[in-house]
Image (tube, rainbow, N blue to C red; front, top):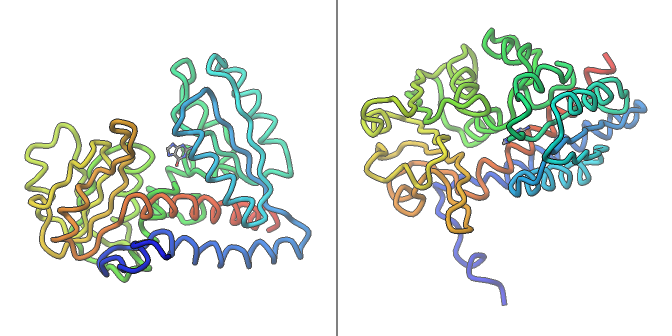
Length: 296
Ligand code: GUN
């Protein structure tokens, strides 16, 4: 007997992140095959420090995507007590290893390790996370030769492939983090296709967040508060993107109250199955690109 979820199709305003990510992975498989013909296997190193449960799951998913695409991957797991100097020494070795085109140090890191120092140590040409100051700077400058952070890049791709018009749109980004909020705003306000939007960033000191949300044609929730966005904060027909991953009583809950917002949104990402798979697809894309660039 098929389960109910296959009998009742999802509402057509739900953006299927898994399907779009699968399409991108098929495109990437061709590029990996081309690279192999030229004698290069893309290589990606993961570094995980400590026992953060979510990080274990995320790195596991990224390793699986590498295996499916024929990207060589290796994972270095370091103990919670690792010093910053020890981590930097490992990164020095990975930077120098010609088999590796990308390096990803999974955040969060233990408190004795300064994340900005770590991300500035990964060579910019191996920084498939897009966190090195050179790549952050290139993003701000609209220089497309750098690597863009995977989650916001995945959201742009979701919008473009779902035919959401960003040109002239009012975008409200909830959250100003370095991984999603800030780079998201930088990408969408650039001049060019899939961008050209008017962007507002809201954060913990913003007065009347709900009023900002209600103006948005595209609302991107990346603030890390479970089910923060309610139906009454959403303009009817708006596109709502849920980036949140909040653990509440052992369950993972997004930043959007999906059941109620679904009824007013023009389009909405499910969670899981929306942004998450796109983050991984963009990491694979950055890694394939890093390998391609290494040959030029
Ligand atoms: N932790 C949460 N998201 C990310 C990401 O995109 N990259 C890394 N390195 N760590 C993360």
